[in-house]
Length: 204
Image 1 (cartoon, rainbow, N blue to C red):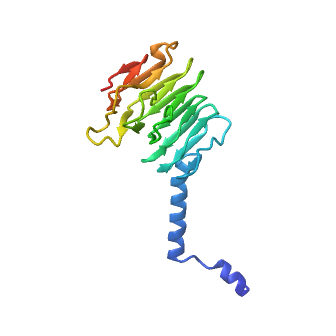
Image 2: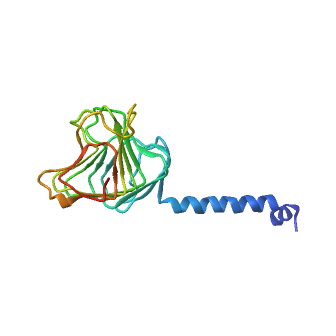
């Protein structure tokens, strides 16, 4: 056997084997997070024609326009949409934060007509001095939404945690929709703003 072949044929030492095992383990964990992983500062990309599975890492991801059916976004702790999210197709968000300091932003989330959106264990926050003409979530005509185990709160209130500065509307379901088209279930509303034309169950 040539010296070259001897080098190729040598056994791997313990350090190399351990590195291989670690690399394989990390790859396995990453593969379980989702088909697409979005890092801080990167926009969310729907990389499939339907049923995109996205894992948003901690940090700000800007806004999002859901344009493909069945998009599912899982958020790591601190995964934040700091600009408006427009749900144009059926979508699910789990463990995400929707938060803006822009008091002129009309709403954190809009569910457009014909779309169904599910928000599970998500946090919705706005600056406590946001004008009462703005909302946290708006459901357009023929849109539908479920907020399950979510938290609604203000940010930066210097005196009372989570409370907004004046009365307003937190979740607004289009008046032409049925109240059953928007359900807020087992959630916490710190804001004192109202949930309009929606079915609220176990929300405190």
